[in-house]
Image (cartoon, rainbow, N blue to C red; front, side, top):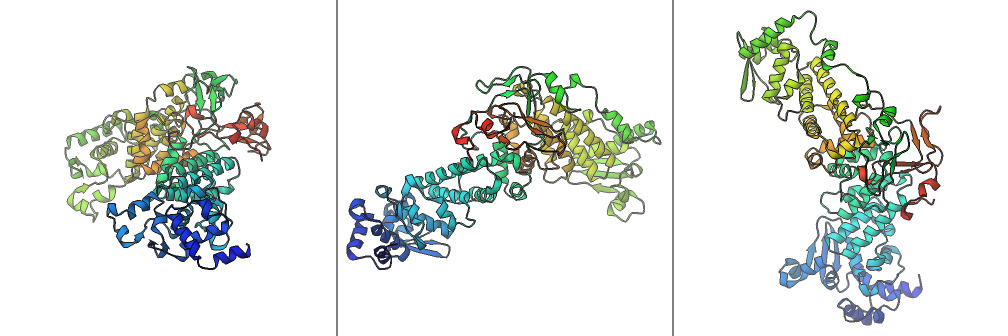
Length: 640
């Protein structure tokens, strides 16, 4: 720093400079007349730091700034406050209190406004010490704020967080140029880091916290951050700090899910069209992205998670090619033998009806329930009552202590029990099961609210769990798993799913039942989540399903974790053992190698902007940088 420049910073403005400054901020003279050098611009910012000629006070928490109305009025937000025509108290009191922002954010705002002048955008001022931010702040809209410098005073020193905060400041105070500058710098970072290691994860996490803060609006910034989150989804499941976001920030989880499913407006625009897809078995074309055409007989293997170590979406041109590689139990029904027992034989396996119980006696017991004859106990749920029998209820571990003659419980003394937390139709199912020791799920579902098979299975499992009927739990889970496996296989046909997902209402009812906040249903969620994951390329256009994340935030969080490959979220449907380069068809990954899971050196991956079918549901692998860059838009080529 020169001696003259240092002396300018350490003494009050001279009278002639004071006059020039007053004329400048009121628009009376040109920058060419006043700011012929960097040294002449410095006192304008010193006025903010020292409070010279201040006629207004800005307050944020315990921090105050002496500033100038005419400078603040460059922001439409403040201009409205200071207009006497509007009658706001700020115009009369010469004081304005800003809430919802931190002091460091207001400091950025005031310094930006102090340097915001369209006719001084070209100046570049080298400033040190407490004014170091002004090098970028005085550049205005086109050059914008240098986020690399500004982030040094942010809480987490995060580039993405700083971009997001600056964008929200510009949006709130109607400084469009500030918002655009911050947005531009964030987009540049996202493109340049898309294919690097996740060493930027702490930066990304700080950016997410800032962008999804409930008291801010940061729509455009969210889209760019979300694009980065979608891009890294195959690698993220083992990063606990990021996974914690999904439980902590339900709004972020919900939007992340929608982004993964390809809902529009969730991310910034992707410039590269998805690749066409070839049959994994015979390499014939399955999907041509130019016309978005899918042959009539087309199948897809959509795994239960998107973690690339053991799951890779595959396309098949025919049923034969699909069944050649599909895991046992997940082939199309016409091509496979029965791989599981029927519900009836499973009932025998679990010994729900034991050899010592006579079937005729059980039928007689059920008729006693229906007639109420010789009853000595009453079960109440809501407005409905059942006349029942103690000796039959004692088959259930939950009721046994209540109906024992020696029991001190009031239910025994009153010969009456009231059950809450369940609907009357569920207690009807419970009692019929206790009396007959069997249930027919097809008949039972006709009395469920939505006449849904999956919903009925979930309700039966939760009944068995609450009333300690383990056999009923096993039976309900068996039914549910079998039906979910059937739906999963049915969803492998691309053409059928594009035409109509016929079982979607049944699935939605099952999800609503399984994710009720007042029920424990964890064990039955896995099969349902497997079906959801298998359907992920087709779901975004089904409004009824896409309403579920907002209705059931916990479901949204679980669905995202399942898609990211977090353990214990779904049932196992098999793994893909080999990945091939999408450019030259050479092997990229071979799980059958002696060393186990191993990618070839220098392997690359292309992760599409969503998992929706026509926007690139099948990620692509490449054996080298050259294969990856082949045909790639220059913004997404790798040059390191």
